[in-house]
Length: 636
Image (cartoon, rainbow, N blue to C red; front, side, top):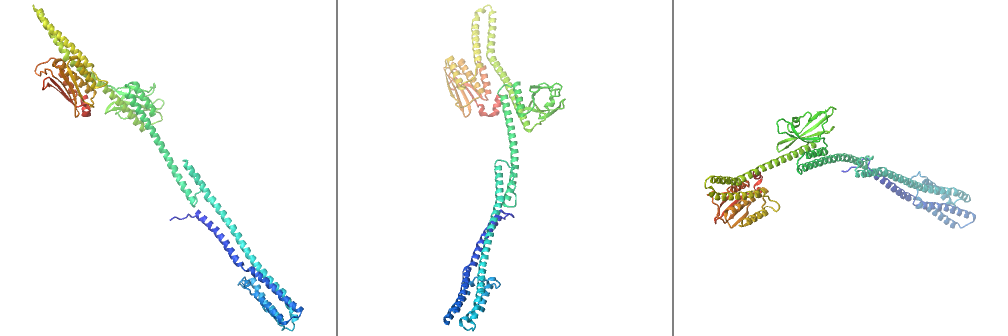
């Protein structure tokens, strides 16, 4: 339940309004009371005036009776009428009603005095004179006339008392009205004063404070903190402003911290982006590493740095790839004297300290350069004087070092891959030369030996002709093999892709051999890697070369199909068919096709067709359908 404060404004204003209402009510009630009290006083005054007039009438009647002789009976009746009229006027309710019941009241006392004088003196005397019972009537009339003036004076005194009573009541009413008016004005002015000092001024202060708070300024406080409603509101506002000021300050601190964190994050992201871009969009060189070190200095607020890699020898000395540091002669440094084991440490991020001759402490952060648990070297970065290494700087340095390690690993793998590819290509060339030109040249060497043996005989010139023909055929075969080898080594797939290369190959062998070779390519959207496309094209060329040289066929067909992710290739002809038992020249071609099929992870079969001729069937699963492990295995 709500309880009003001890000095409640509502209570004060209520008291003021109640006071004004009470004063107005008192003024109205007093007016009504005075009006009621003065009601009939005018009639009473008028009636008192008639008493005075009636007294003079009686005196006048006596005077006339002394001056002339009248009928006694007529005088008596007139006298009785005058007495009765006087008494009726004396006891008239209009006069009696205004008299107070208090016997000590002056007006009441005066009325009683007049009543007593009338009853005890004037009336008896007047009646005796009217009846003629008094022997000294002439003297009595004189006495009576002498009593009229004092009696009328008493009546005038009573009238004056009536007038004074009315005037006193009117004065009392006037005093009440004036007092009520001044009290009402006082209460009104007091209420206006309280309204101004206790309501309007605090409200203006609260409004000013609210406007200041709306602008974000919570330092303004209201001074009105009394026990009334607005004082409690002002105190509550001050407490709220204080809390808001603290929260706003705390919020500003948090916003500043978050802004600082975002700036650091942006700088870290920019550094990582620049590092990745520099390391992976251009050949790795000293200029690239130097640019990365400058980015580290600019975006992380670090000092000069260096990138050192472990050497290949056992001396423990490192190789400095790039640096932005300037050695000061005579000053201690990480590399004067060389301290490679100290820089490498246990391949964890650590800080090294060096005391220079100027008593300035040099701090260098050593960040390991690694990738997949392989340690390549360290990234050395100086901490600027008066600063310390923050956690976000440490994380950024480690991220940059990891990217450098990844770039070094990729570069080494690429170099190793190119070296292995070169060795593999040399091995392939050696196999090709061994199985083709080497055997042909060996065959030619044998033929030359036969020629020498024949020429050493007496009739050798007659038998040398067939050998020379065989020698000529062998040279032609060796020249043809050389051209095929050159074509094979120059073969590449670019532009339109495998489909166009197959059509060109089929058209080439069709025009060169005169055999009607058809192509049925049903691979559709199946994608092969570049290595798989090269192997497939080589196997098809080798099979078509065998068809051209040995099959004596008129028609041949090359078909490629995708059987639920497995690639199946068939090369068939309608020639004489392969002789699996007889020894054949150029047998090296089948061995090469087997090696290429193994490289694809598949198998190849060469057999006679059911309707004659020869069939070469190759089946393998592409790399994308066999998963990453299989991909790594085939690449290896």
